[in-house]
Image 1: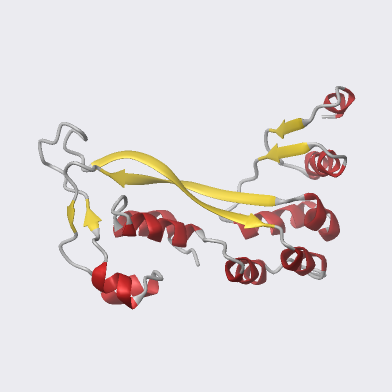
Image 2: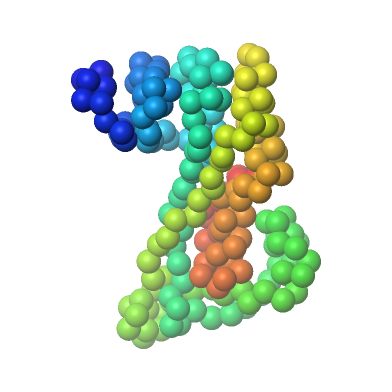
Length: 196
């Protein structure tokens, strides 16, 4: 990465931040005006902040060098040609997953229809995958929460602030796909189990 800096790039892609040295260099690149992209393996966007902190980065560096963290997972999509309306809806489960009472009543919820002779999905009921994502924008409120964290980053506080500012969590993003009829509730559960 130090050699990259000598070439004065405008945009830099750091493969993955696995250690403190790589993370510090990526932060240095960002702080010197280089648009810097990298990957980090975490469960969701707020977890990326605490992972960087646990690597040994100072909270003020994390707060002011990063503009956006995107977390994503791939979610299997229903075959558009053979999907069928869900046989049963569990209103209690749907409420726990964040569906509104109106959505529970009016949404067209689908499930896969495997075993058919559908040429589109070859009888699997699933056709392709797509990204289910959440984007954490480092607003002044998020930056303040990170800087004032002290000894430990509070992921729940960051998530609460971000959702109050309009961030869709992974689960909310999957919920939108269910409401569009692209994904089943079972697939939503599989991909977002344990999410908020």
